[in-house]
Image 1 (spheres, rainbow, N blue to C red):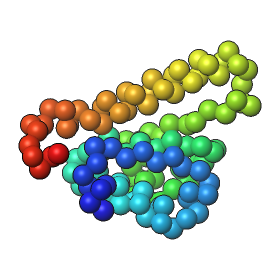
Image 2 (cartoon, rainbow, N blue to C red):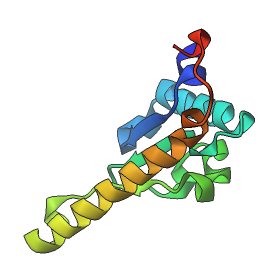
Image 3 (tube, rainbow, N blue to C red):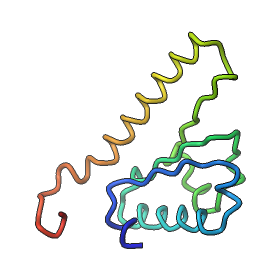
Image 4 (tube, rainbow, N blue to C red):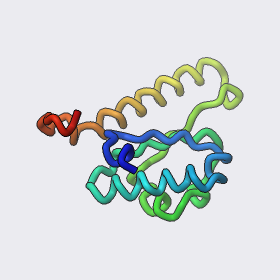
Length: 116
């Protein structure tokens, strides 16, 4: 719990198997509680590996779905190579943007020994 609380961001790579395990969904719920409690809604990044629907997620995550805005991982079989390259670039652009946005709070905070 301390690790989640002290993290700048958490990244969850979610598959169908991930959602079937109690411990992993508990961790996701815990990270959501910490982030929304502290006003750090951009802390959690969710990457969907499969065609997972919102309804399959824990209630707390579903409730904040519009704030979390999960990213979808790309699969080569879904499209031709040229479109895949464009889609991959877009995915990584979105990912880097989320990482930057999630760290704005900490980048502006003064650094102290307790933050290290």
